[in-house]
Structures are given as C-alpha cells and as structure tokens.
Image 1 (cartoon, one colour):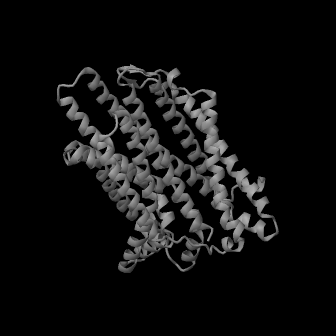
Image 2 (cartoon, rainbow, N blue to C red):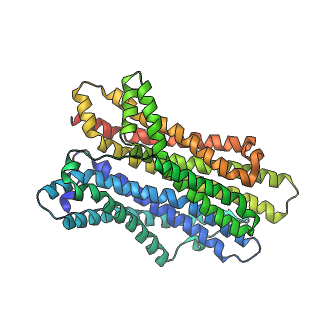
Image 3 (spheres, rainbow, N blue to C red):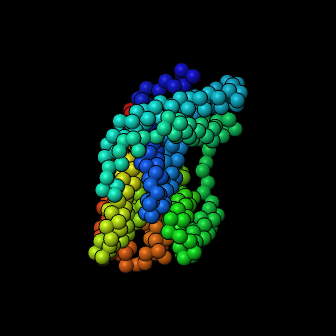
Length: 435
C-alpha cells in the first residue's frame, strides 16, 4: 500500500490534484447545503419559494459535483493502473487488487475531504454575512451539524470507492490489456437517440407541469427536470465530439490539427470529461441571464417590498451558484487535463522519438480541448434556452442583460479552462523529459 501511495518521480501533482478536487467537492457541498438549510427554518408565505430555489441550486450542483468526484478518483487510478496490472500478472488475486485500489482511493479522498471540512469551517463566518431578506444569515444558521458533516464526508468517500471499483474493470479483467493500453472506449449512436428522447420528455413536462401545480412544487420539479437534462448532456456529448472530430480529421491541414482531431476521436469520452464543466456552466449561464432579465422586469414594475427583496435575493443566489460552478470547472479541468497527460504519455514519448517538437504537441493538446469547448458551450446553452423558452419566452432569453450575462459567464468559463491548462503544462514538459 505504501508503494502504491508513493508518487512516481515528477508526478507529485497527480496526488495533489485529486486531494484538491475532493477538498473542493467537500467544501462546496458543505457550504451550499449549510446555506440552504437556513431557509428551512422560515415559515412565512415566501418561505416555500426560497426553499424551492435552494433546492434548484442544490440539484443543479449535484451532477457536476459527482462528476468532479469521479474525475478525481479516475485521476488517482491513472497512476496505479500499471502497478496494479503488474500485480495481477504476478499472481495477485482480483480481490486483493480490489481491496488495495479501493482503500488507496478512500485514503486520498479522505485527505481531501478532511481539508474540505477545514475550509468549510473557515469560510462559514463569511458565508453567514451574506444577506437574505436584508438580514445576514448568521454563521450558526449555515453551519451543519456534526452528523450532517459526517454524512457529506461519507458520501464523498462513497463516490471515491465506487469510481475506483469501476476503474478496476480494465485491470482485473485484462491486466495485459492495461499494460499494453489496448482498451477502447466506443461511443454508440444509440446514446444520442436515448438522450434526445429524454430531452424531448423534459421539454414536454416543463411546458405542461407549471399549469397544474403550485409555485413551490413547480420550482422543485423543474429543478429535477433541469438536472436530468444536464445529466443527459453527459450522454450525448461524447458522440457529438466523436462526429465533429472525425470531420476535422478529414480536413486537417497541419500536424497540430491532425493530432488534436486524433486525440478527440480516439477517446471522445475522455475529451468530453475535459469540457463537461463548461457544459454545466453554459447551461447555468442561460438561467442566470434570464433570471437577471426577469428580475429587472420585476423591479421596473410596481412590485411590493417582499417581491423586490425576493428579486434581490435571487440575484444573490445566482451569483453564489455561478461562483461555485466556476470553482468546480477550474478543479475539473485541472484534474481531467492531468489525467489526459498521463493517459497520453506513451503517445508523447513516441512523438518525441519521431522528432515532433513539444510546442506542436502542446498546441495539439490545446486544440483538443478548445475546439470541443466551443461546441460544448454553444450546444449546452442552446439546450438550456429550449427548456427555458416554454417558461419565460423569447423576449427574456434574448434581452440585452440576458445575452450580456450569458456572454460574460461563458468568457469567464473559457478563461478558467485556459488557465487550468496552463497549470498542467509542467506535466507535459516532464512527460517529454522522461522520453
């Protein structure tokens, strides 16, 4: 176990990044849940609306948080695939490999979760200063009970253990295939049919449901439907990237473009993981933009003091949700970029021996992310706009303040991705140095 936990030379970041990712997940979940729980103590007429909106934020953040936790566990698995497959070839039983893998992943996740708890406790006084209804929430109201903290930490550890167990399929079933990197990741067109069917069902429910239920129930159900749509994007996304990469591969006129298209087409699922955070941010950007436009309409009219306070609180909630989403995007891109460099280090070594310069490989790596990034951002925003259309109409979606908010959010998200790629550049340099 000690040998597995010890990072190889030049791979300290491969251990640090999963710890940071699990710490980010834990701190965000504890902070968001802690802030949301304060609304459940309210009992006036507007309380159900606040509680339902808190549920929207929680549900929209659950899918990307689980994805980030899974990405951290997969990165932790990358650096031990070779070692575990070697143990299998030496005769270690599948059960022994499973125990080693799960325990090691849980230990890494545990370190990150502990750091996340410390961060949560440190920022709780600041979160308590955030005003809702013109009054600060208070640190006591947003602090989870010890049982609540243990529940969140247990859930993070469960995600790590489950992801580690799933990663064992390659090692336990075919250790030689892992050593030879002979595994493939096919993406079937059927997932598009299934995904579009689910999106069509969500669109119908979004159109029909608000007319047959109360406001609070409607908001809660819509939050679940939007989360389902966000999850469906993770099903459709890899196939879309596969098709576009195949098209770019046929039209490539330079070495870096050819390498970038090949990287995406060889593993569209891995390519999607690198930009899935932007899919979530782009999806939420549409809600933020239309929300800002809606609040401006409410403030322009003769709204009551309670309605004006609700509009201001919605703006605050949107800002908090977007900040949380950007933190997840930064951590997710960094983790997935590090995993990508590790996955492709044999390719980098071969390219180095063929005389391909590092600058060309780095350019190809950037294109392999930025090209899918644009497709993902636009497609996710379009999907969100279609779901918002039955509720708010075209006027609010295309309002200047809505388009400006969407543009700013997407620009910040793309900047975060670019910065995260720069952070992982040293891993690529070391990959070439070891060639």
